[in-house]
Amino acid sequence: MHVSIETLEGLERKMTVQIPSERVREAVEKKLKDLSKTVRIDGFRPGKVPLKVVQQKFGGHVRQEVIGDVIESSYQEALIQQKVRPAGMPNIDSVSSEEKQDMSYTATFEVYPEVEELDLKSIEVEKGAVEISDEDFDAMLQKLREQRKTWKETKAVAKTGHQVMVDFEGRIDGELFDGGAGKDMPVEIGAGQMLPEFETGLEGIKAGEQRTVEVNFPEDYHGADVAGKKAEFTLKATKISKPELPELDEEFAKGFGIEDGDLEKMRTDIRANMEKEKNDRLKSNLKNAVMEGLQEHNSIIAPSALVSEEIGNLRAQAAQRMGKDPESMDEASFPDELFRQEASRRVQLGLLISEVIKKEKIELNQELVNSTIEEMAIAYEQPEQVRAYYRQNQQARSGIEGMVLEDQVVAHILDQAKVSEKEVSFDDLMNGKL
Image (cartoon, rainbow, N blue to C red; front, side, top):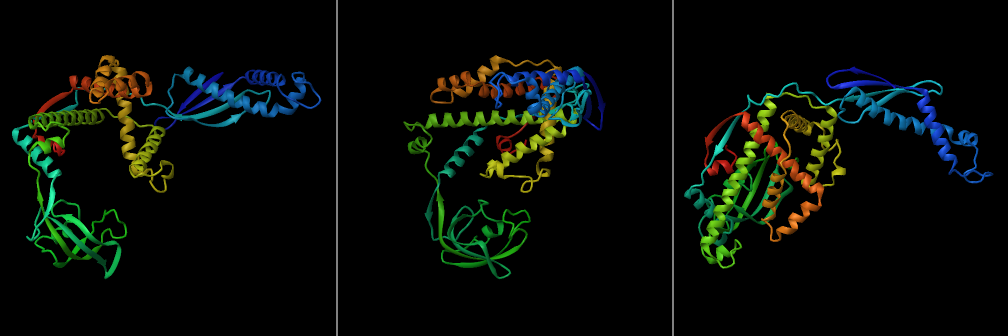
């Protein structure tokens, strides 16, 4: 077998493979002999059909099957011979397979990019340092109380923090539009659930009072029929209520699963959850910063075949978030360009992580895998079932192994990168202001 390879643009390669006619002929003869042992033809006993008869009847079909098999097997052999790694499936063409002549074909494909040298020392990472203060804890308690607030009717005029039950009608150019009318809709002023002008228009209103306000729908509003347009709303307040927060008592504690209503235990649990949220967010932010630095200081080309595959994954994920069947989301409804930039970023990052693992000789730490599974297990009422699940389900365990290996890559890069520390408040951390 003779193989030659040509470098095209970027990562694309064109490989020409020539296969001796004897290989094809011998494979055809073997398949015909095997077929003669099982084929049934009128006038012949099973297993006694002459080879010549089998060849006359099935020769053309068998030859086409053999050519397909030979292309598949020789393609893999040629890749090994040329020491190339294709990224995605090849495009096979220019197949020449005349009898008594050597067979040939070309395979066009992309290869994985090569990184000559990784630059990890130039990566600069800012690491957050956060302490949970008593003020942070008190603010969290207040937030939890607000989540469980009740509403009590009031005769006062509506203000920020009040809930207004409102009947409304909205018109654009004097015409009522779809979804523009409703009755007894609760609106909490200042909560940002409605457009700003709608909520502001309810400030100072009394129960039974009616007002007219203008509302500008933003250009990117989810309702395409009203996006970018100005509407006039008639608002009538039917009831105004003020919030009432629950007391920090035994009943409040029981609402958080503290069966005996022990307030101190509730406080301990809340602080522990805050610490966990803090550590999880710091870890996630640090990992994102490391990955951004890795891409910034190490350029790599993303093979288009892998990008196309990732675009498909992102489109399917978008469909699932919208509660739709991924099969129904084609390129017409969700064009590739919507996902291309993110898909390219993910492919590049995945390739760079693989290069770090290979070049820095990072091996999976099974002890970390086991400890990660243990941390997950103890959060459940029946931890042994969780442990057994990951022992018996290799696919699930592989997911944990991939996550742990990425964490090892992050730790390795941090050992070589320039790391600085920045003090951040708990509130800023949780609101993405690190």
